[in-house]
Every structure is written in C-alpha cells, then in structure tokens.
Length: 212
Image 1: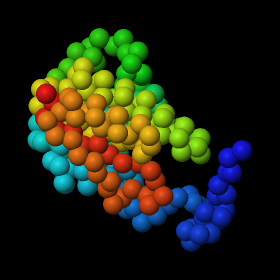
Image 2: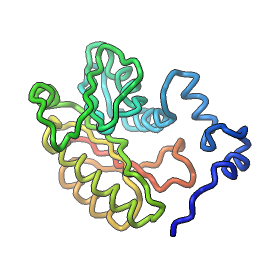
Image 3: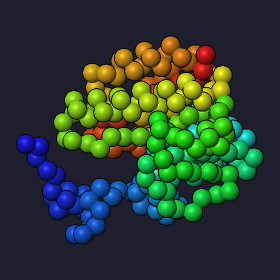
Image 4: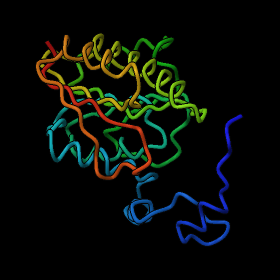
C-alpha cells in the first residue's frame, strides 16, 4: 500500500496556513501575481533563456497545454505574428491572447482536419505532460516514458525540418532509451533540469534542436 501524503503535515512543514495549498511556494505566488495559472511557466522561461527554443513569428505546438501557463509564455515569445497551438484532454479555462488556438481533444485520435492542417510544419513542439502519479517511481517513470514517446511521434509527424522539441520526462529505467530515440531525430539533444523544478521531483527535460 502506498502511503498517502498528509496535506496538513505538508502545510505545517512549508509554513502555509491551514486550508491553504500545501505545495504553494514563492514561485506559485509569483505566477499568481503575474497572471499565470501555474508555476510551471518558470521552467519554460529557464529553458527559453538557455536554449532559445522559440523565436519571434514562430509557430509552436503545446502538448498537454492545460492549465495554460506555457501557452501564455510561448505566445509572448512568438509575438503577435506567431501562432501557438495547444491541445489537452482537459479544458483550458483562462483568457488567451489572439495568437493562441486551443482544442480539447486527444492528439492520437484527433479527427479535426482543419487543426491537423494548421499544425503541420510547426517550428517547435513543447510538452510538459505528466501522467497521473501512483507513488511508485517505476510505474510513474514508465507512464511518463509512454507519454514522451507519444510526444516524440507528434514531433516527428508535425515538426518542420530543423525544428525544436522540448519534453518533460520522469527519470527512470526508460530514460536512456528515450534519449537515444530523440538523438536519432535531432542534431542536438541536451538534458536540463530547471532550478524552478521542485527539489523532490524526478522530472527532467529533454531539449532537442534541429530536427533531421
């Protein structure tokens, strides 16, 4: 049996008030102050600052885009003449700028021909997708690997030549296999863990540039 985390205990350790989000930290509060729905925006910001994944006027596909922080940040980087497309099984409920188009659907079973046509030849595919965690590191890592393999297939199908790919993966036995698969399809492949990742998190990012 997996031991469940006690929110009250977590809140006490973090200094949060009873009833508050036990995982709230300074980045959560910063995101709220800057009108981002989640602190994950700062992971993409670090990636962008270091690797320059998104350029002005680019077209970007955001996989697993809810709740929308990466959409908003990518839209700013691409600018008014760029386009950001998002897809998620969950609805994105925040107001979005005019250069963002989002659909609620499954990319693997998508039948929206107009959307599929629009995302052909995007400049970057970015994915912050994560599985529903079980508490078992091996199971969670395997589920993450399966999501990442799907994201890589989407990049292979829709990314323009010389395009870029960003993908979150949980560290586990399958990590090396995924990294090798990415290296076969891109000119460069780096492993990066943003400082804004929570210390206890096993997540890490593959940053690949120059689709072959």
